Image (tube, rainbow, N blue to C red):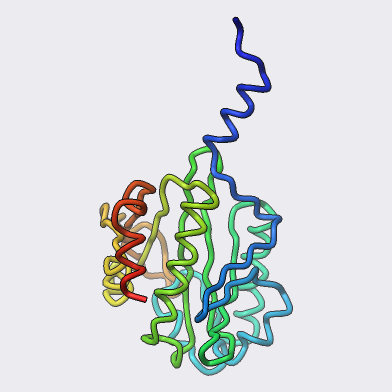
Length: 213
């Protein structure tokens, strides 16, 4: 008996990443709230852009100054419209103030994978545990709601602090892409690639991060 087109369509859907970039996703626990970044959030992030330029020392996309922040927000919102990225603004419930931003990018529904990054926080929010809460929320969403098979992470190979942080939550180092892209100053950047697979999330990473919260 031939398999119906409807059944085939259902099978394809079940084995695709279930991420709709037009939806409004809210992720939160008692410490953090992540909601979709909007153009009006410029006012919440401007103090960081004006007062803490070193925040983007290792970032390819920098949000320094008013124009830099406007371009930063505009670029990621345009990428969201194209279904490529999904940016969040982060609210720190403990300090009762906006703390920074993060996003999913390289979203591939067909291959059931995406990348997590472009994460930054204002100075007073670093080292407080906020990042661990955000990562737990984001990874739970990616693997359990969206059914991702793989979440990938990238960092400047010189950004040792960020690399340690990613490994501390269970990311597996895969390799280094040499001279993979140019930095804003024109210098070449070597990019380290790490990842977490769905099986690793279920077997050990979820428990590992939960124990650190």
